[in-house]
Length: 214
Image (tube, rainbow, N blue to C red; front, side, top):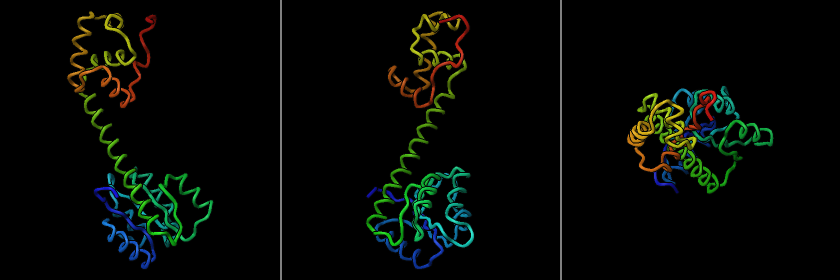
């Protein structure tokens, strides 16, 4: 079991299913919210929400597939566990192709459901951690001046100081000064750390090096 439990959103039009799942999950230490329709859930869920969704496929009004598509369109990346009494290969394929975390059939074994929810929460936590890391990298890169960013681009390509100096029409000593500022602003102390940060940001060097320069 993971340490902290975000909300498990239970979306099912069957009162008995909602009540039984809520009781089971609360006994296992989860926080839950229940919704009798896809429309109610969509009206309540917010961008950046943590946790996961246990979602029925066939409901009056908005179907489970429509809920899934709406979350995708709104860029709400909650892991979705489809739980349905109408499971077939086509439905499972469509749900998983649409990004569902897993597809389970009713009645579901309690331990299987809990294990799946645990896995979904770990996936959610990892996704949010990765998003925070990307945001942190972008925030650091925003501190660089345009010239510092140019120097960084060439450093990422493995260019030495003299090469960077020739490419940018500055002295090697000036390149050293820019590199020192880059290290300070990006809060790194070694080239390996700088390269890891650049890779995390998707920096692959300048898109079009100056014409005639190797």
